Amino acid sequence: MKKKIGVFDSGLGGLSVLKELRKILPNEDYLYYEDSIHVPYGEKSDEELLRLTSNIVDYLLEQDCKIIVIACNTATTSCMKALREKYPNTIFVGTVPAIKVAYDHYYKSTIILSTPYTTKSTRVQELMHDYKRPDQKLLLVSGENLASLIEDGNMNEVHNVLVRILSSYQGKVDSLVLGCTHYSLIKNEIHKVLPGVALLDGCVGISQEVKRQLESHSLLSDSQEKGSLRIVNTKNDSLILRSYEILDSDI
Image (tube, rainbow, N blue to C red; front, side, top):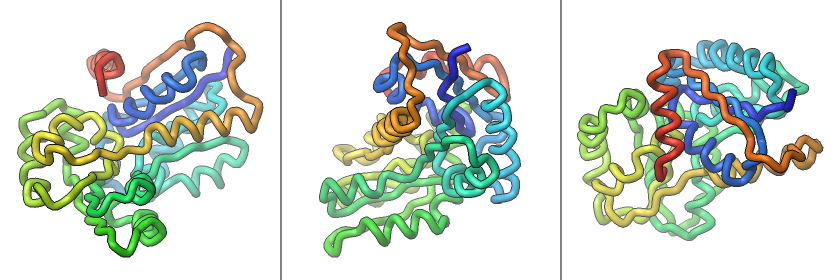
C-alpha cells in the first residue's frame, strides 16, 4: 500500500493547505482529517489540545501516513514540540502565522488576525520580535469565534464579526496575516471590510516545506498518476461533501 501524506485541522480550515499541497505534489496520496466535533481549537487548553492531536496522530500513523502536516496554527503553536517528542520517528510540518511574509514584502502596517489562543501565544510574540522592521506596525487582532462560524457556514455572522473587529482599520493597514487556516476560506468576506488589503497566508510555504522534507527523507512518490484523496470528518458526512466542494472552488 502506498504511503500517504496526512493532514489535519480542527475542521475545514486546513483545506487551504491541502489545496496547495495537491498543486505542488499532485501524485501523492492524501488523508485529510477534520476534527470538526472539537472546533474551535483556539479556545482549548494545552492539555486538551495535546490529547486531541495525539489521538489524531495515532490514527494517521495507523493509516500508514509517512508525514503529518498540522494544518492549524493553534495546534502547531501548542502541540508541535510535544508531538515531536512523543513521536520521534514521525516527520511533522506545522503552520505558523505568515508574519515573515509581511516582513519580506516590506508591508508597513499589518494586522495579524488569529484565534484567541494563537494571539496570546509565545510563538507569535517571537515571530513579531524576529520579523518586524523599525518602520513597520504589527497589530494583533483576535478573530474571536470566527473559526466556529466558518465551520457552520454562517457567513452573515462572519460578516458581522469582521465588520466589528476590522472596520476601524479601513485605510490604515496595507496587509493582513491570516493567522488561522479557517480564515483562508473567507478572503472575499475580509476584502469586503478591508478592500485592497493584501491577505497573507503560509499555505505555499507549508507545501514547499513538505516537499523538502519528503525529498530529504527519500519519501517522494514515484507515481506518474494523480494521487488519491480521502477525507475523514469527526462530526458528519455532510461536512465531507462540503470539503470536496471547497477544494473544487477558488479559495
